[in-house]
Image (cartoon, rainbow, N blue to C red; front, side, top):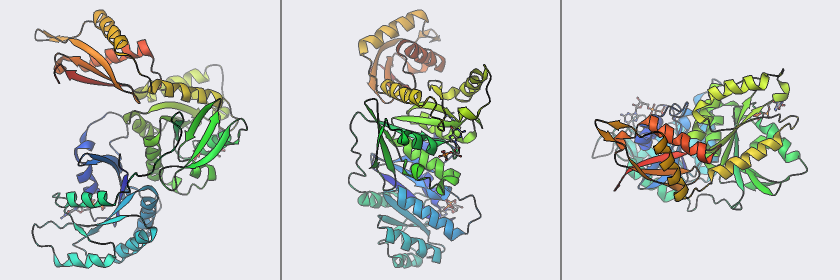
Length: 439
Ligand code: GDP
Ligand code: GDP
């Protein structure tokens, strides 16, 4: 992964068109995980074999009725904070505007690498005369792009990668530290949890710089295990102006998830499950991250003997797309079951990094296929020859068979269930890759 690129610029210059053009096919993958494909503001992208993250700051609108300029400033600030390279998009048909100049000056002052994109240069051949006035923004050579037709996007990405810092932010945590992202909607209790943990004398806490300038992480040592809580400075300081903007907090959560080994998905028990919870949880799931679901403010819920069971039943239905994730009912306020939360984080981590030997896997496969015969179609039967674990985080298994077409979803589910029944792997998603022999 080579860094993060943010797109900024006035409304209607073509930011989201450019974003979609660069992200391309990746996003057209249909996935039934809630929330993932709906927010097209943050995505992995690829150029000449190099992966990077792309943010469309235009998708992040303040809730208030801000005038365009202050909105652009806010988006530019976000880009300066989060990105390694910024692409300022302008529009050749409207020329350089005062707002373009204002944001260009702001980006220049930040010292962040900027690439200037002059969009809507649709004609092939000679550039429109207005093109040359974009040199006046002082951001170096403008790059002519037509996001609609796709020309110029290659030159644009070449320029972006020329300016990408070499080793975009090295993390120097010990190998054994577990990286944890605490995610959830505003007011779920994330700050309270981090402050509670950091305030406990039994734990050793220190601040360490994360990958981006403002993402300061918190290192915690508990019972001989190191945990790095990602991007917690804002939470501990409780300066949460930006957290109020929903899309900003979702973006921030996405970026924390990307760096995490284990996600703590925090739900507010007094409110129950919401749409926003499914967004970040869905993202963690899609990225293959292990998760623990913390149901917070449990102290504030009126209880009788059955309350927890009833809550659990409802939440299990809400989170059925990630049924592997354990639930812990906590109170960040009183500290109730925070020890249990740490235990679950540690256990879940041990599962997501697990490696299972090929011999053991094939014993399981032999047993599973003997118990429920693989399906057949038009006289041809599915044969599963061999299974091996290709990688961890999340555990990814490759199964070789005679014909992929015969390996129906229902039988894949059966094999996945057999893997879980045999090996556990609680808390972590698993992936199955199907190959035909000879592939
Ligand atoms: P955003 O508000 O900056 O995200 O802008 P959009 O991506 O929504 O684009 C605004 C309008 O400009 C849409 O009607 C696009 O179809 C159009 N547009 C975007 N890129 C180009 C381009 O390269 N050429 C032309 N002619 N129109 C474009
Ligand atoms: P954040 O926005 O997710 O960081 O949420 P905060 O930590 O700022 O908490 C939001 C509000 O919920 C504050 O008023 C907290 O005091 C309250 N709160 C947080 N955790 C708990 C809890 O476990 N129990 C109760 N009763 N209130 C809590």
